[in-house]
Length: 115
Length: 115
Image (tube, rainbow over all chains, first blue to last red; front, side, top):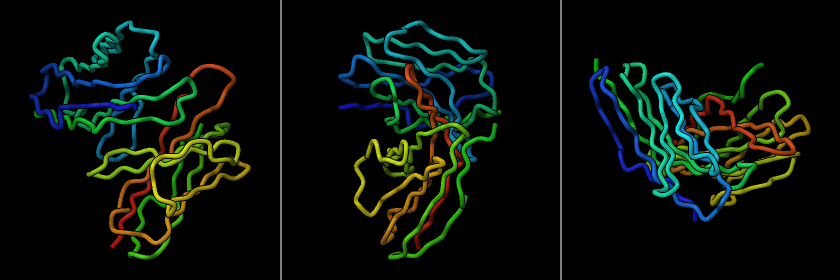
């Protein structure tokens, strides 16, 4: 069975602190995709990143970075120098196969950045 | 290019009624997926339509149904509404190609309240 676990329900940090959101996944597929989405209060899911199961390279995009480790089935997300605008719910997700029409979401981590 | 649009954005119904939600995918996208988001169950996959056929289905009762039209627009219907159907319903569209991953783009959602 496929499963995504985000053990951190809520995180609150002061602006400019670094924060890491944890994600652990389970799947029997050899081909799969992992994602992070951001959901601001408006409700719309905003795509942040996608990684496929064959690419364990870490990625950095501005203040955002992702650490994918197949050995521990983890796909963690770090925000460096957090800002108030980063406040949102963040979802880690997993899809099966290569066409990925069905996405399994984690329960989300609510991130609050205090000024 | 216009994004995924969903109508209506907000809806209030009473128990026992039925409701139809609409989703217009991004132009050229042929796959439409539906998700339900509730505080208790999180984000859950409902079903996916491709070329007017249901291709994938989540674990929801038969009261939840959908269809897709020849222009790829999709509707989902919930009959005999229950209080627990109150949720944010998200639609996502993707471009189905011959190879590679087909990323899903999410709409703003329809917030359904059942009284």
